[in-house]
Image 1: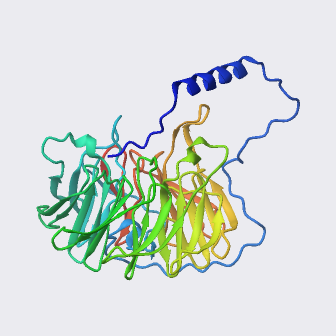
Image 2 (image 1 turned 90 degrees about the vertical axis):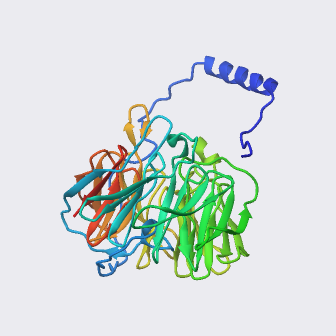
Image 3 (image 1 turned 120 degrees about the vertical axis):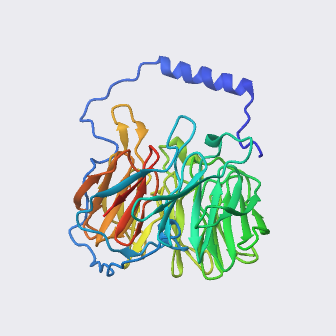
Length: 436
């Protein structure tokens, strides 16, 4: 893999350090006046008049085969109890550790929940909590924790898994046996998307692939423009009809024909919050969502855009980022921002209709240990956010009002899946929890 780190001249570094130390040695005057926080308190803010919101009827779905339940990442309105309780919990393997993270979301297909832990182990769990099988995908000679990440997709009897070892595999959903294994050119941190006989995969070294779903053969390979640093996780490609939307680590968004890899259009998502160092990283973290003819995508530095699906033309830009897919609903778009706020946006122009704060730090006095938030999803007529601080939170979609929470033992590690009126979420300590 190419080294994407910047190289500096020692002399320039020494001069910069000397200037910085000199500046720090001067006592900064304390100005009079009242101190106010940079960001508002974590409370709901909404204008007096909000546009009407029609919540789609909740579906009792059976499968949730991709991230957010569809190849478009367009999460449906699904059924869930008004007061869900923990039904069962089972271990699925390795969780977070010093040099590895559990970042892969579960999927549900054919009466089983499939998970990928931080050690490259796939587990199939029946919807009653009984483990059916477990398979290690670590290549011979590799340390399991070195290949964390990747993801799972299931569709039409196919179960495809990508791993941090830089491989894509098709497994037998019943036994876990490997049907094919394809070596790629870089680490894979995101789940694939399956459609029209192709598995579309993004690798971390700015490469995209189309694999034959029957054989695993590489049908096409795309290289993004330039090089860039990425986050621990990664965004998955989205697919609607013949077109896949590919999110590259440099902030490039490219629409391609899924069967051939032929480029339809290219757009760029750059920029972020000026007061944050991380805004110089252009990695896309808010997975692309295709809502009919609009594509929503966000980065981790504080930028989100709406693009025309046919042309790639930018429709609007918002100075808010995202670590999860956006949720379009009836003329509104809901998103958990990079600044730990749940937002309702006007889908027509991206303006913020309300914002509700979420806890941002486990140690707020030192701004240490950021709390991850996954969602939102629309279940039982409410917005659902699963958080790393151990809470499954519920909110009113119309106003952003807090509707309560239940405990997630171990804290959420990835986006939940919902099927058959049950919410499944993996925790940071390597367990799968079912809420009903």
